[in-house]
Length: 442
Ligand SMILES: Cc1cc2nc3c(=O)[nH]c(=O)nc-3n(C[C@H](O)[C@H](O)[C@H](O)COP(=O)(O)OP(=O)(O)OC[C@H]3O[C@@H](n4cnc5c(N)ncnc54)[C@H](O)[C@@H]3O)c2cc1C
Image (cartoon, rainbow, N blue to C red; front, side):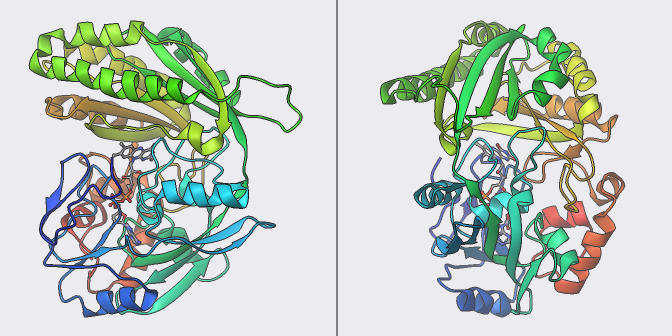
């Protein structure tokens, strides 16, 4: 998974999963806020702001102007006393985590990869897990944006608060984010405890597992009986020594050999002989093993993902999670095309960001995946019909089929978002077909 999943040769752009592509009329790689403003202002066609192409949807795809921010990176200012850090928007999470380490700071919560750009991750509502913690956008204190007319505006909880409520998860529809001010926390260590548990037990104990751990998640292979439960907890400064760091050779073995190379090989067998998939899936489930280690937070949150897949993820009210998963367990074995990849479950606290999937409700996330090249449509449709009954909200960067009408009923502030969009981008310079589907015509 490289810094740029999309091609940078001035021709075709393609996302990481290979599910979206575009041929931008023009590419630009600005090195300053002035150059970004000039690119936006001069763009005759609809603009396209690129992150790293890690969204599965076509949210970043248009045939207009590609604004590639790979030369617009790094920390602009940092106050280690308050934890406020201002970062250029094209910085990848990997580079950011490394730079924050050097300042003795960290992001309070992260998702499970770090190849995305900071702005790209924010724009789609990227999240990790933690019942008392929000997604990445809840860690934002201020934004600087370049609007469709080339003007530069700052927003925060006190300056243009409506724009701030919209732009923290702005889908790339409101303007180009030039810098992000984050509220970071002192760097911290996490102890990871990963172990297999019967999936029925995990569902029975779901509420206490979610409430009893700083960062709780589990993976379940659809034909298996075991789930892999991951509990990551902060290590208090005065804690007795616990499990140590994972030695380099073991990290390589577990993450690269077993989870990537080994699992990738199983997936290839499954793709060549789909009838074997349920058995391979049960094998993967039975082979889950226990491990525990302590590392600096971002090395625990983030794992390498080299096996390519397609993903859909929905946020559901936390109390609906168990019902949805039980329904999915009953239905998946009836699908004509078997499912190779596990289902991932995470949690987040309610927040007040207008288009946050956790807006105003305690949330559980269910992510379903299929190995690249295997049929996924019927599985994803089935999932979408199950989560529809509990008002599931799709991740903006992952596959879904909802439109502006339905999303308007799922998000109480959807109409407010559209109002802000009409104010800051009246001509639809940042529009693309995906945004028209989920937000309506500009
Ligand atoms: C292997 C893998 C693992 C993932 N894990 C997680 C996870 O743990 N949790 C989770 O929630 N999601 C996860 N995702 C989804 C991913 O975090 C999001 O799709 C994210 O948006 C990708 O960031 P990007 O930099 O690639 O942005 P892109 O996908 O390239 O773009 C996303 C949007 O951001 C806009 N954008 C980018 N930069 C700017 C800017 N400067 N100003 C304005 N708009 C901008 C683009 O125009 C587009 O609208 C994962 C995806 C993959 C492929």
